[in-house]
Length: 393
Image (cartoon, rainbow, N blue to C red; front, side, top):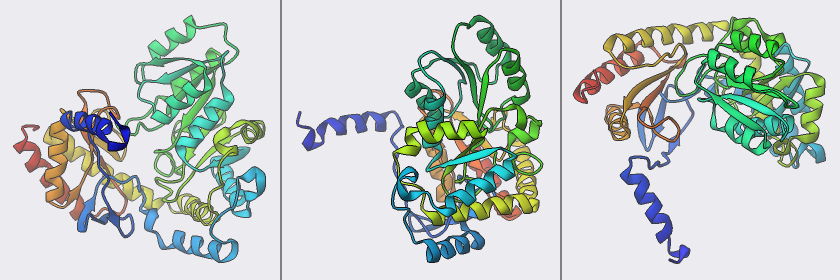
């Protein structure tokens, strides 16, 4: 076969199509709000990580525009060459203050942050313990580090302790976990993880991507929720979800950040974030810090929607966050459910393997602070009717 003809790729695509696993990009016009224009049609948006509605907040736009006027558009180079601009430093100082950390380093994406951090901290002589449902970027970071690693069953602290007790003789041992699990919507038992780490002398790293701005009294994340901020070695998070902007960060000791500047390949060998993006993210951190009302509205919407979903008989797993899964099992059924909802003007993505385990295909709904009660009720009614027609409730 001649790859230029595309035949070899057609076979793989056909196999994905047959399994109900082929994905296609959709075009969104305009800003990311509670309503979006999807493929030319206005729909209610129930699959965005824009939890606080900041992605289209005018204050973030103004911060970006002012920064462009002052600093231009591009950063020109990697930060170790000539791209280390004032906007980056100001953002890192703001995040460190907000998180109560000694120091902070920003990355271009959450994926790049996890890959860079993990591969810098751990190596061939180390052992890493990872929750089985951790994000793919964590797994890829561990693989790139060449450390030995074990996956413990999701949130199973008894098995994790057995693994820790039985695994010795390594230079470093580390426990890495998501704070909020992005497909299930549940929380890591971070208090118990920290206790085990201290008992067995392990480094702890958490991924606060879906927790920043959402969880904790002040929106600082799950570490704040459990009151263990000072007992965690590495706090990573993203600026593209509740913060409504783009990029990622790592918070920790000054020595940790210095090490990452010198070793993290995904930081060293890439052009720095555009300064305007850093400026908009800094404004978002200020809003998260100063305006708890949006977070309170998000949780009120979440509680209302979650109770209704469970009351209808849908399987929402153990979700306790604005990420609310509806597990249907079969990939084709999940795709059909999503399709029918879209016909009714409700955009909810079908999540299928390999993103989730085989047999657990689902709809993944995300609630936003900007959703109105009318939005929620309309979505709930359509979920009930269509779910019933598919014999899911």
